[in-house]
Every structure is written in structure tokens, then in C-alpha cells.
Length: 131
Image (cartoon, rainbow, N blue to C red; front, side, top):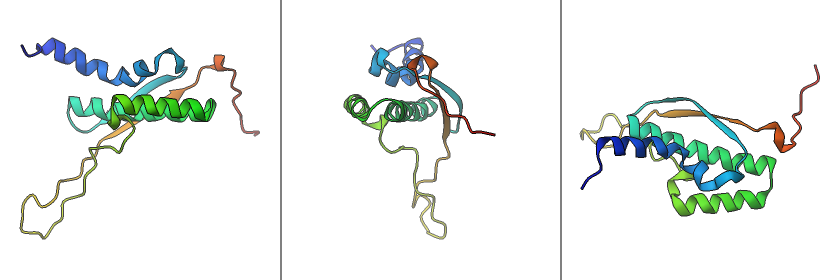
């Protein structure tokens, strides 16, 4: 039997938290997705997942060590290669002047902003500019 509509909606809602769930409790960062535009509901979800996983890997590289970053990359790629790969929404723009209507795919303009907040309990010191 195919899944019901409520089950599909639950699967779609759980998808953005997948990178965090894969990494477990060892990812001590707070993520906040502030803006996502362009495309439909499923496109929003897939557009949000990739920056979240890239942000988690970049945060571990910056604040922790390179070995944990490599382990995280391997774990994420093992589950889903699109989490760290190139965005599949980007295409070449349509070429005008060609007699074919579908000579090229049109370009997709989807964007996502992901903010990372590192908790103070990590023991990290924040550098402030001297004014």
C-alpha cells in the first residue's frame, strides 16, 4: 500500500533534520534556517538539507579538528551523496536564438540561508574587534 498523505508530510518534515540525526549528539551547534525561496515544498526541503550538512561539516572543521570533519563527511556521503555534493537545482540557462523550444533547461533560482550558532559551553573564545 502506498503511504497516506499524512505519512508523506511527516517524511518531508523530518528530512531537514536528517543530517543532524545522522551525526548524533556529537554535533554541538544550533542551526537556524531563516530563508528559503523558489520551487515547491519538496524542493525547499532538499534545498535546506544540503546547506545544513555543509554548515555542520564546516563548523567542525573550524572549531574542532580535521579528523572529526573527515569522519562526518564520510558518514554523510555514505547515507546520501547529495548532502555534500553539488546542488542539483542549478542548470544552465536557456540559450536564445536556437530553434528548439527545450534546447536547454532553464536556470533555477533557489536560495537558502543557514545560520550557525556555536554554544558557549564549547569553551570557545569569541574574538571581538577593538574599537
